[in-house]
Image (cartoon, rainbow, N blue to C red):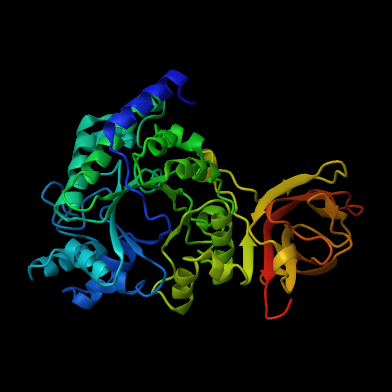
Length: 504
């Protein structure tokens, strides 16, 4: 439920009092996130060499990445020797997991040499010309009463003790460690942290959270020397944010935050159609920035895939082009195939500049629905179930395309649709923006090599009917089926491949 007009005015007044005007942000950034664990502290055998300690920075240096974001905790301890919070592993010794033992020993091996693990990364980032941001999951904490958690019957961040603890952690990062930016991660729940607040308390908690974020911003911007950038991870839709007490438009209008990153931790699948235009509009008027997250998988277990499938450069190019086209000020990604190789470094170079990808081959892959994301209100176009033949029923699939194919003149444009339980004798109709594709060249091929009979790929070579720049509408329908074949079909996948070459 949206706050009333009176509440919105109160929020604006609170926000204005809570934080000084934001400095003009560096609008274009390319950010890369390392969670400190999977591809870092969990991996090398202690004692940690400096080459290993520098690796998260060195593997992205020399690309378009200009901002390194480090997840300094995951909710059960900090990955550095904090003076205000608990260090990861302090409460679970002796260790039963080798990865946790490595984390502790790797940090300790640096500390024993007079090196602070966080300072080592920060200094390496600056030596390579990168800004260093520290990311904190806001409803996670280590060493505090676990009954504060919503999942344990508590009130989450509605507990002032939890807010005060996280403020102290952030203040230490800003003042003692002098980081270039802090990222307030409110989007890690569910999956990465407990909910921010109980659902029934979200409305009353909204002004409290606005005031709290403003308090953090005042602290960060009034430190001696250079002001600290204040970033926030938020959910992709305004309704999802409000459901957890986040009135993000008030944060932006009143310059509480310098940048926002829309994402959902509970769904790691790349969404080229992420609906973040509402954030882009608010950020533009506030001189703030939007850095949407390019998620690391095309398909994973949440969408029914047996394995996690990483996007190719062509797939990430398409999503990046869409984000630029929809108002992004920069791009943010993480968890690329590790160790980062040529393909990954190429991705990190290309996503930093929309001009680099404008005339390069792209593959728009529509996102599949996941149960957890849907329950949170984050829907997806696929799959589309057509239960029976019905010539009067068309099923819409909407998607965005950044390419203006009339102007860029690609070599080929192919629309690919994967349909299960389909046979050639079916009357399966496809329309693009109201025009039938019946006159376009169509190639059929088996859906997969293991069970080639279960599905068909329909590849439409588009020559006359082509997608337009911006929003497109695909409509599919099942007119009739052959005798003695009942049941329906399901559109499982939709891809649009736009191939460029030296000649059109």
